[in-house]
Length: 262
Ligand SMILES: [Zn+2]
Image (cartoon, rainbow, N blue to C red; front, top):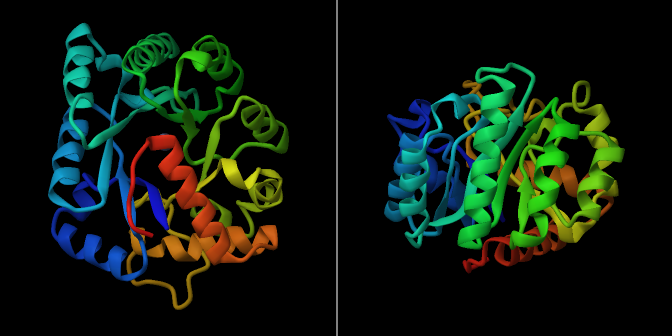
């Protein structure tokens, strides 16, 4: 199992980061991709990926942080991308739900990162919320120049899943799928995603699966819960979790061009 979305730079992990990584390994997580969401965190993510074995990182600027994107940011991201730990550009994309940066700023930073990924021949790690139409309009011109793309934390409709799958995008599924109430629509979509396009992630420390038993004392999510998400996804699809874990591991290796023991 490989967790493609861990916000290990989060201050929520400041006190026990080593323990979190150890617990994940003990729970069968063979590798992790540490998410970078702005320049500073991308630098931290790269350093953590250097420190922990079987960890890699992304470098990029999240839509929320897009207002800070400058030509200097692009230069610093380019430098990070040259290190062996950084295997994807992102997290980048559009989030019109909260608009912490204006839509114009988001579109500018997203486009700049797509161009940079194409230039460096790197896959992209994408975020999209309430922006499906504009997201595809910006992404489409770049797709045949990118070696791959994953839309992380996918919670869209069956129609959207089909549109992404047709374009060869990978879809990251989080513990959102474990919520029988709010996650109901996603639970119906998950069986429709082709296995060779599926990836799994915790998005820790966010999105603690709601159906863990017994309920953990803390609401903080951690990568050790990845097996629970994999089991839930496999159950919804009527597949064996070990088989699906092996398939998603192969997907990780293919998309990010990395190798790890499974
Ligand atoms: Zn995201």
